[in-house]
Amino acid sequence: MQMPKLDPSTCVTPPFYSGPMPYKSVEQGEDQRVTFRLCAPDAKEVVLTSSDIMDVIPMGFPPGTPQGLVMQKDATGLWSVTTPKSIAADTYRFAFRVDGVKTVDPLGKTFSEELKGIDSTFEVTGPEGAFQAWDPKIAHGSVATLEYWSSSLGMKRRAHVYTPPGYEKGKGTYPVLYLVHGAGDSDDSWTSVGRANRILDNLYAKGEARPMIVVMPDGHTPLRPGTMTLDNPDFGNDLTRDLIPYVDSHYRTDARADARAMAGLSMGGSHTLRNGITHPELFHWIGVFSMGLSAGSAFNGVETYAEKYDAALRQSAKEMKLVYYAMGEKDFLYETVAPTRALLDEYGIDHVYNESGGGHEWINWRRYFLDFAPRLFR
Image 1: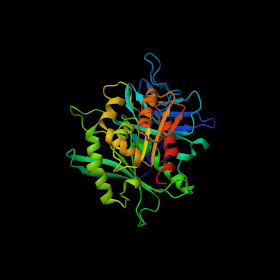
Image 2 (image 1 turned 180 degrees about the vertical axis):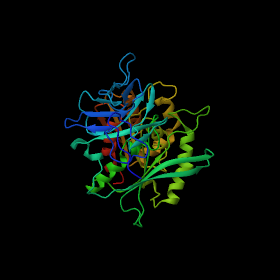
Image 3 (image 1 turned 90 degrees about the vertical axis):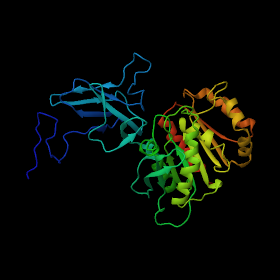
Image 4 (image 1 turned 135 degrees about the vertical axis):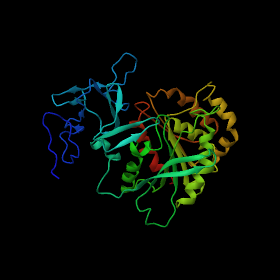
């Protein structure tokens, strides 16, 4: 069978064509501006969107401001746009909105699952992003998709599990970190866009972190009356009664509390406040990113929290090896920092506080993880 030939008058590739594509869908320039392209000859409007770089690709906040970057179509039906300024070296999610319909990159190879739907991802390379980039010169761990039965919820559940380089051929046990995503994401997010696995690989190569298993649970449970995103006992029951026992019985874990950690961002930080630091019999290492307790709040109040977990917090003050707390100064939850830290101080729970620039965003969360992981299990 003869290879179909490209028609230069259109960007559309013929059926069964397997040769070089006539365009790159994402291309980084020398100045770190990025060009995006999509073949859609019949479309009337194509817009580039991304929730990760709103200073470059606007998302319509506040209302009335532009949402995305409008793309231009050439004579072949190829739409393109170049970002108006450079983008910092890091990993980002994006999508195309074609005549009002969200569309992932049809030429893409990397994607990130969210709570609802999927985004494409792209990586801007540069020295400042090297900590989370894949390096061919070092050993790499593996990420597996784990399915298990949750007796607490009466359903099949999913998690992602990272095992460090050498795990498959080894015989020893490893400490375990339970790492939870935010409300808009999924158990896929800490690897697909958070790059936790690559960050750890690079830390191990430098001898800066202790090898560990990382379990990334699904932070969401089916909605029902009496459960909320931030205070969700169903998640806690599934974690403590089903997922942890399953992991300890199927992986070579060190099952002591001294060798078990829990951390999370945003909603995952709330899960950690309610199911990590309040279970000193299970966890002795805690990380909370971009989340806190509010003064006087009915559903996320520091007073209600203290009353509910008083005994556990008193015990945690005696047993915790690390409580790490991080927040961006522009985060919309920044006002929760003071009451949360005051609560920790009231109970005598020593903690490391990392206040960064920026807001509620993956650029911060990757760097919090980079700072947090080397402190674990020392």
